[in-house]
Amino acid sequence: MSVFKARRVIDQIRGRSYEETLMILELMPYRASYPIFKLVYSAAASASHNRGLNEADSFISKAEVNGGALMKRLRPRARGRSYPIKKPTCHITIVLKDKSK
View (cartoon, helix red, strand yellow):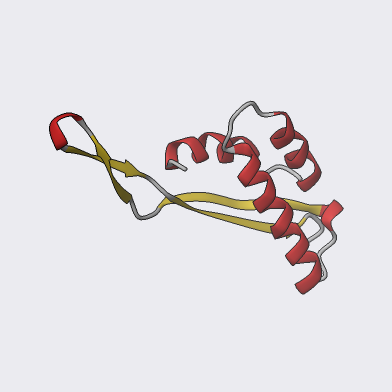
């Protein structure tokens, strides 16, 4: 997805608690919110499994979106010509921390 579409969603959840973030992402009308929802859920699961972090006491301390590589495709056009399609990608980073620390 585009960096701008992902940043619009990420800016809403930065600094919020884990449970509040999940509620916000479920109710957002953007298509970018579902992949970010899955990413936050996965980050919390790996933090609780690997670091022993309690999901209820965690919050999103860092959330950033950086641009990735452009996927270049060709679309056929009239008279046998082609038109380039540039599909943008992005890298999303989510860091969870404990509130008590």
